[in-house]
Length: 213
Ligand SMILES: C[S@@+](CC[C@H](N)C(=O)[O-])C[C@H]1O[C@@H](n2cnc3c(N)ncnc32)[C@H](O)[C@@H]1O
Image 1 (cartoon, protein in one colour):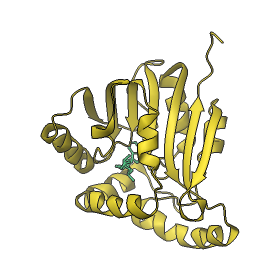
Image 2: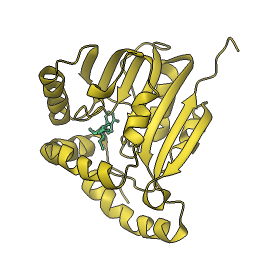
Image 3: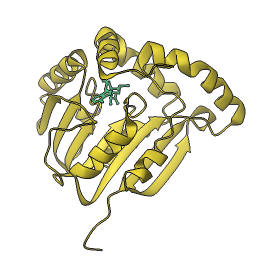
Image 4: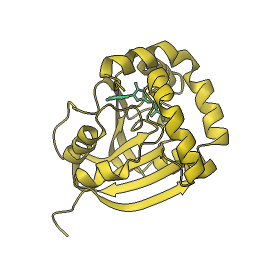
């Protein structure tokens, strides 16, 4: 099956941006198992948010976070995020059009990279993992809240059957497991928790090797 390109993703999220928060509200209430709040609570220092979307995380960052730079491919999603930042008068935020697979950022410039429900849509998750590794300082963390393949065989089979449709409609790889991409990019996995219905929610912490340790 043809994999979605950056252009497909941009088109899908531009088209559905105005429904996104409503749909996410349902997903978070019944499925996401608090993973967004967990991910945001793990962020510190200079933060890069990949696939920042409509900016749902932005009002949640606390005082441990010095600055957030968010990137997204969809200008319509970014427009909602910019509106949220302005309406809620959130400071320390910068939002840019950009690709998580090729970030326009210097190496070793971030303490945290965060991805909430974005990794499942990125066309080349290994390239995005390598970029996260590159932009993190030694000892920095990549925090992921995701959905992915169920821990239950029956649910997993049903998800595999549905996946071609979810990829076609929303570029969503519903059975993707982020962990092998992160280890291939050089990260050490320090935490993986599974939760939500059928164990489909992932909370992952991946650390870049600290040259000092
Ligand atoms: C399901 S939404 C998640 C949005 C947000 N992170 C959240 O938690 O609500 C996925 C977002 O990732 C963006 N995206 C997908 N692939 C991307 C890439 N390669 N670079 C930047 N953004 C990307 C999409 O445009 C979309 O806004």
